[in-house]
Image (cartoon, rainbow, N blue to C red; front, top):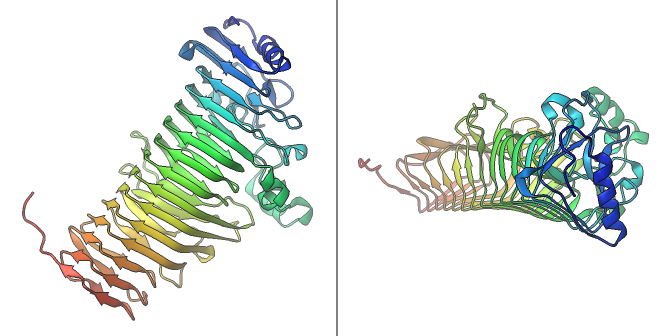
Length: 458
């Protein structure tokens, strides 16, 4: 179909083409080069993609965008939506086109329409499955692509409510549900979402969000100048985040709120070069939502990535963050191996440590250019944390504050390890340091550690 051009509204012509293909059982809606300008309707979407439809453009020359003259509005809005709250869509492909959301001018109403957020009560047990967004250019959107549902009743509203209202709602039993923990809802998760080989430039929130998603892929996207990079959340599982380049202004990759069996591999993640120094930044963030829930983030493999943070004030590459509203969170069964960390690593929660647990962690065979922070057992619970075979290039001593950790076969190229006075029952063996290990802790077991004088060679 031909593009109507910048002086016309493309809502009807685009929807009619989609409906025609869908009614025939599916096929390709082939968009020509040019402008497809969309208006904002009274409901919360302009164009609805239906099952078995492929929306294919002519590459960068095909431009879909929300009319920049649309009045600002804080209500959530989806210019192009996959399915509706009552009729989901499956087997959808969106490819080879350009999208502009004009989020900065319009505000919260310019969330990217390839997102299938379903907030209505009817939609909680529905899902849109087998969805692919690929080879697109996405600019100035709130979110570029993804799927999500409301976490609990306090998020059913189509706009962000104040934190005080959220806390008040959380104490009202009529306002709360079991959320994504509900068995029927878990069975109705989105399935097989793939977002790959896209160029995503400027997002006011998460670049790609897969929420309540069983089986997903976020791969080979070039993501720049986004507030937050890719995210999995609300019990998502069996998702790969692979081969993306992410330049963020707040957080890089987010593994959050109940997600498990996630693989993060081969990504390059760092703050945007011109970002203002901000102490809250981290390349890889394990966190919760500000919801009064007990949750677990588990069975995550992080391998072969480059996490670089030289711009943010904290220089943080990895962080835990349990929100103050959360009842508790356990971060467990996490394997971090074969990565390069050009910045500091925080195996601790600075925000809500009393409600945070770190358990069964393997941190192995990484190259680390910063220090590694841990918390005393009295501050944050941690157990069976193994730090093994890493090349630690931090100049000076790294302080082990935690208890019952295993520090095994690490090479400290410019310093040593110090065991803090509050640390208890740590096992330190086979490590190579450039000065003797300093043990101020209790019940420390030292075995086979060697001191190698630092080299004078450049």
